Image (cartoon, rainbow, N blue to C red; front, side, top):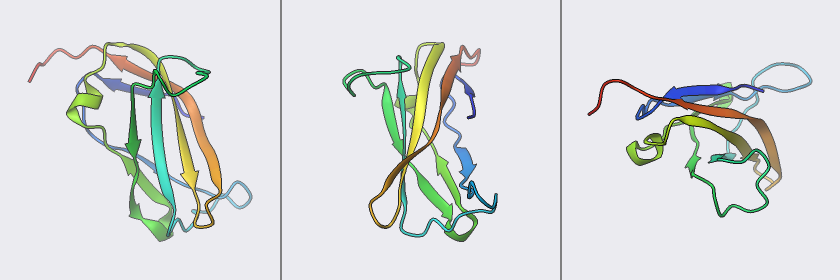
Length: 112
């Protein structure tokens, strides 16, 4: 899994490439959907305390490339360590959690 560290207020996109666990080659993600969700708890029982969710934008379906760009509101979180996962839904409606790790927000210096 991949831990993500961001500066508070940064709205640049996190880009990932979906690869086959068998071959290591990019997966054609045409017709797929993606959602990244951040929560203060590693193992939340409900979605009640989720900080936010971001719908993924597919950049290149045949190369398996998808990005998650937080809004200004989503990026303005109190510095600390949170947790995230990314769920992928294929064209047949099958759900797979493809990432699960820490989401760390560090204090920035420049305020806009």
